[in-house]
Image (spheres, rainbow over the protein chains, first blue to last red):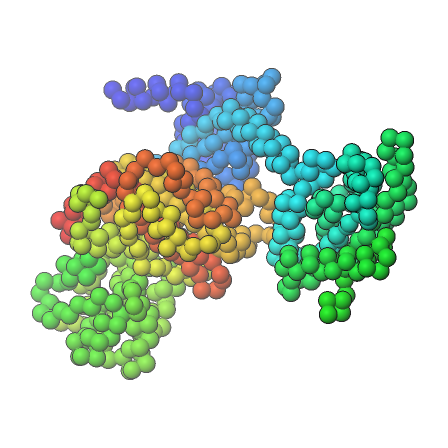
Length: 316
Length: 110
Length: 205
């Protein structure tokens, strides 16, 4: 009785069900599998799965199936790691935005009377809908993250995000022995006067233009953030002292070479910069920032509109 | 419970006095007290594990017939306890037939 | 806590031994996968209130640790959830130990954590189930924490149980820094099932 009903359910259920023996020959092939693959049960049963589907990742999949025979344990695949096993079409051809049906699979040991695993039964779930929602959710999260990592006025990263990238980069240097990175602190000279003379609108315009000019000389991998009122921090990955000094000098030049147009006036802006290199193993985030800050202070002290590299002797 | 399971599996005809130890330290103490002509030794124990017990016994000239009874079925575990002087290795859950066979193999009178 | 949830000394002892036997099988699998010797810990058993669950887990895996963890549900005669918690080094060294190259993608790295976790959970819980004459089935493993704090494992704001049984076993390697904890958690009604199964197990000894 159960046999008949069981057979009916296996055949008709809208979940992929198939079973394999130890040599990957198909023992069971339900309608879902037949409909989506275009290979009927008559044509599938008794044949080798990898001959039927040469495009399957054989090395990986056979290992998975073998593990069920050997370990007598369930095994799983998830669309999050492998979007699909079989290149089946899905039912959202218009709204899906996904190439093939996203699939989760469960591999179950089928034991014979002696407790030995004689076959592996596989259920294949269509999780395309879940995958579509998940990817929509991820996009929304990324947007949210992006907007919460930016400074509203200048569009460059905010302080929190910049500091987090600094910590990440230290991790990369320490863990994967990447080349050291440099930190540049930038402060606009006499910015208070700009604000006093042209009002906050003038000051804001200067900050926006300065940010654009700095962006113009950076590489994609450089991290550029607004650190305080008129202070900016740059993290230049895999950049040594010489490289960092060249970039800092270019930034200084880019900021000061032209005036900033505000209403009918031209505002002249210059900047002072301090540069420090992160030395693996010997520093933390605070220390390297502190060093860049001391170098920046040295630039201010010696007349502004210049770049200074941090020297240990300055600290004394 | 491990001890209870083991004692249940010992041959009924075997006329011996049984001393129980709940960790490695107690086992070594029992050995020092001359209570361990035959020792059934677990490996995973609090205080002092089975390897440490074997090392201690070996260091002191091992005057006991040690049968390791463990759930650790790594081949290397078996090799290691052999190297440390254990006479035999029986995997958990223990089986009366196997224990009897090991004891007879070594000519222990039952 | 009601007395019916407490394990008697004998039941606790039996559970510890059953877990010990089962983890031996899981440890052997792990040793096979990693091709190295695996140290097994003495299983720790704890019944904990929902408010103390994070603390109890921290006590076992270390507080302030940055962990990566997978979880899996099991059902059948016993039901609950299992977690495999990798410490920071364990997580990083896993791919290395298995002979993968550095440039392994993130998806593959996650798949590896899920696969190894699944093997440990399956071997250990199937071992327990076999000894206790229970049958279990498992859900797919999912990643629940990546380089996060222990407090990420369980959202204590929304728990529907008061007490849970927590069983922990630990696998460590001697050649490399690698530790992973296998935690098995069962809610109240499953504890009662487990107690019955343990009693039957002891009666049949």
